[in-house]
Amino acid sequence: MGPRERALIEQAKLVLEFNWTGGYTKPGPRLYPHQWSWDSALISIGYSHYDQGRAESELLHLLDARWRNGLLPQIVFNPSFGNYFPGPGFWHAQESPDAPEGHKTSGVVQPPVHATAARLVYERAPDRRRARGFLERAYPHLAAWHDYLYRERDPEGEGLAYIRHPWESGMDNAPLWDAILQRMHLREDEIPAYRRVDVHTVSEQDRPTSAAYDRFAYLVKLFAELGYDEAGIRRRCPFLVQDVLFNSLLCRAGEDLAELASEVGEDPSPHRERARRTARALDGKLWDEEHGTYLDYDLVAKRPIHVYCAANFLPLFAGVPDAGKARRMVDFLERGGFGLSGGHIKPVPSYDVRGFGFSPTQYWRGPVWINMDWFLMRGLRRYGYGEQAGRLRDAIVELCEKSGFYEYFDPATGQGHGSVLFSWSAALLIDALL
Ligand code: 2M8
Image 1 (tube, protein in one colour):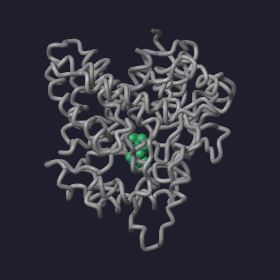
Image 2: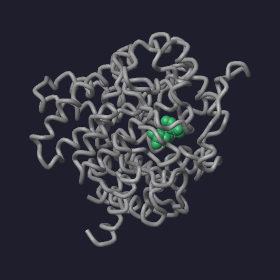
Image 3: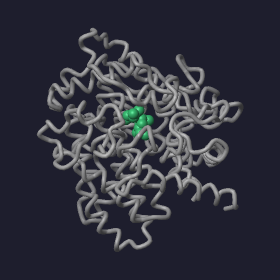
Image 4: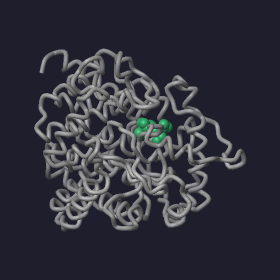
């Protein structure tokens, strides 16, 4: 590694240090003051290279806020910060009998990448014997979290967990959700009163529209009215999706959880069997033979969602497709709209640049996100596409070096957008370089 890379790693560590609160790391200094679930998992992967204590604390702080039914919340609120919408008073999550004591949280989840992160944190520990203490604390939480997803989010036992809010996908305003959100015709009196904070912190044009936020808020109100009863939510929620990204990460995390189970002397086979079931379901129900990639499935309209995002390629990260399917996916990524073959596009954008409603700057509707490219980089490497994976790695490095550790980047110009000093950009840059 040269001095250039070493300097970049030092800068990335400073970003994480800046966002460290003493208990967890803020995703971004102003826009995201609380603890976010999949951010923390990705952040712990960065720490795992140089600060074992932080990596462990990051995950345990989140896992400690797990609900009694296993739900691992999207946000663990920090009572010192009020400047985020929606805050605990809007969620009413603590009124659920399943809510944890001593923590204020939201009432939705995020993609389950935690067991994968915990495995990396454990395996990279300089002192494995000491790290066993961490694993023994983390494992029961992780197992309960996966049990929750298969029990509550997969009532038909298909092997695919559903998400019930765009926030659960991690890709809030992705074009994937357009048709469903459009289908939600809300009367004026159905939209709860709320005041956004995000648009006063970063450029309004880069954030989801108010039409999207009306629907995000409506769904939260619905969950609160139903007291977070999952059976009731399943009957009433207009947004129920079997998402490729979510289930790919669940599948991969299931395999990782099985390894952790063996380490702590528990039976790994139930985790392994569920992960295989999820892999088969992804491959059976969500594979799109015509276009050569995977598609989300809308459980309410009972049809696939024909929208192509970078996230649709995440089964590569989980090792789901066979070599033939993987080849077709790489062809798709290289064919132009995702720019993996080079040209004017930097690394893979979050949405096909030729897709309807693509925007180079609007959040999850096109910009490059470091986490997506990191998942793809690892997935491509897994299938032997070393050259393409190397190109993604170089692009991640170049974006962070030239533009800074932004939340997302314009795929054509590389210009940074959204939050500055964004933690998972820094954490995954560290992982990509080390
Ligand atoms: C974004 O989402 C939050 C809501 O969860 C928001 O916009 O306020 C997403 O990019 C999500 O994936 C991420 O975890 C979160 C914090 O970085 O921000």
